[in-house]
Amino acid sequence: MDRLNSQTGQRAPPRSFVRRSGRITRAQKRALEELWPVYGLEESTEPISFEQVFGRRAPTVLEIGFGNGETLVRSAQESQDVNYLGIEVHLPGLGRCMLLAEKAGIRNLRLIQGDAVEVLGKRMPPASLAMVCLYFPDPWPRKRHHKRRLVQPGFVRLIERVLEPQGVFHVATDWAPYAEHIEHVMSGNAAFERLSRPPSRYTTRFETRGSALGHEIWETAYRVRRGR
Image (cartoon, rainbow, N blue to C red; front, side):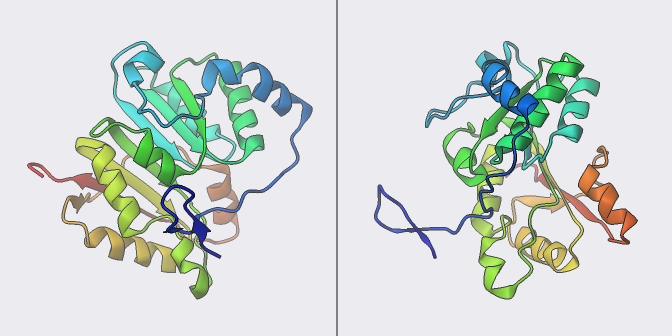
């Protein structure tokens, strides 16, 4: 069932995720209580000042739906001259990510719990991100659920708004029909051009497990055109 927007009274777009309670370990619970003030950004409707949050000016990379955060933390650890921001809805993943960040001793990482569409629309300043990464989003394979897929024309317009000139949208999936859907949606936005080669990235645990099962990976990247 579609959600009702409490402010406008209109039907809100269906969410691209289902909230799961999930089992939270004792360590993850500690992280949510003790490490959130270090790595977490509180819920707000105000745009984020990256310079204030990170205490510096630097390129900022956003990963949407980072799971347990292994690749996000590793990226932040290897590229400490870059600011990293992650959005995730599930508490166990947030807790696990903060534990990894604490162990690695990194400070160039901040996390948000919430719906990526809402965060992009309300909290990301225009032309503020160097890259937006979306790795292995839920493909919602059943036809009646296709409207729940995150990559839709409205979502892509949000990505266009928050990317800086020449900014990159990097996306990967192991579901061929979703890869075709992504290409169709992206080709419908003239602000983007497809790159011949995606940026390098670390392999996710989900991807490793899928590859072992014979899943093929489709990966593409799109850059905001010059002079848009």
